Length: 286
Image (cartoon, rainbow, N blue to C red; front, side, top):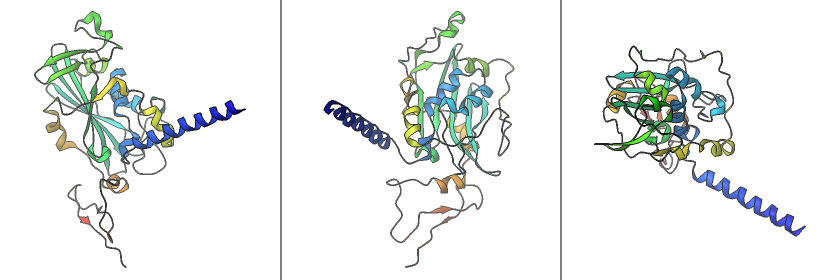
């Protein structure tokens, strides 16, 4: 009997410890509900950008748990491809309303040689609180790619160039697909309230259920301190989409922002294109 009670206390202690750890890893930003590492893994496993979009929106892949417009349903993420010479971008975007879109992240891909390519994914600062960059880990032993066609199925290997050591992702099927002759940039045909027939709307998971699942891919991908593809931000900056509704629904949480006493947090109104909308601070009446 005493042993059973002791085991119960140990179990409760472990459960409480895991819940505390989960809370410690929660920033309060919307990005808590999106898995950058999982998105990069989905790109690796996909045969095309269209297949990549489908993998992002499958609930069983545990990549997306976002509800930016707070309608009680997980948001559908569409993929928009832009390319300029050897650099390609894949923008992950949520149609928040009929007139507003919000970028979640952008996959940056560059062909650096005959059979070499480098990739990163950058989380949007409005979603993650700051620009967050993730790339394949160089110690991923699941598969290797030697650079020859007969070893295509064996995945990435570490290469060295002027920008440091990077993982060569030329062996990823999606990478070879988008750099194949005759490829046309993919732009998702779906928009607000128009989704593919295979997509079934579903409710977001609670944080306690979502957090343990979102860390599955973390050992295969690691944070990066800078953009390896220096030209990518220049291509992306003019096409970036930001939503006033998302900003107001997911304002920076404390301690990132604290309004002054007697004042409310700033609210952005839609006067022109964000972020040039007028900033209105409302003083509470005493």
